[in-house]
Image 1 (cartoon, one colour):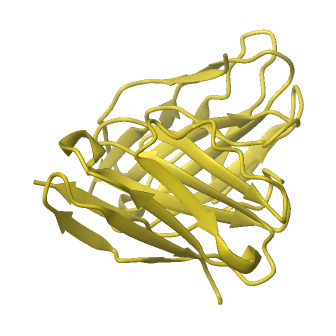
Image 2 (tube, one colour):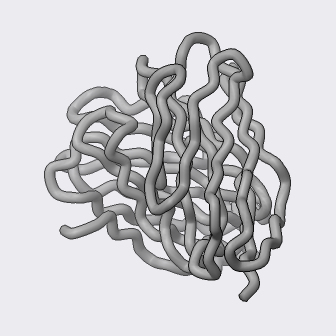
Length: 114
Length: 113
């Protein structure tokens, strides 16, 4: 596609429920990142996928968070048993390779846990 | 670890005023430095970058110079417009490993007509 597409754009969920956030990167981009943007704070790195290599999960805040990337393209970030502190904007970015020159960010998914 | 510190906002300016948003960093090694901008309701966009000391990044009238001696990358614009109202993020990335960006907390700029 022309840009990085994320869905849904907004999600309200009840505490304790599971949610899935989707990222559709630019076609041909092999690197994909997930970040979290909490209110009034900067962006926090969550996870990184590069081609067929094992993902770098070092930024995931707890074992309730997981992500996968199928076929080197679409990625899904899953949050289990959501908590109110999970409320944030989740941003996905992709690039041609693990290069800091060419990140393209999606518009994000705003998650609200009530 | 690596970190980025930005001046707190919001920064409120009148149109045509001079803008400076301060950014300093801490890193082991020599990072590349970036400014990203987030307009209301939109995703982050790369505004400018610099990959080595003394490089100057520039775009859309904005400039920032990579100062290794002061570990700074301050963003400047000579004459801001209302359309520049946005949140600006300073970030760094190391040229090793996953190359993930480390972001500052962002500075909101409000330009009044």
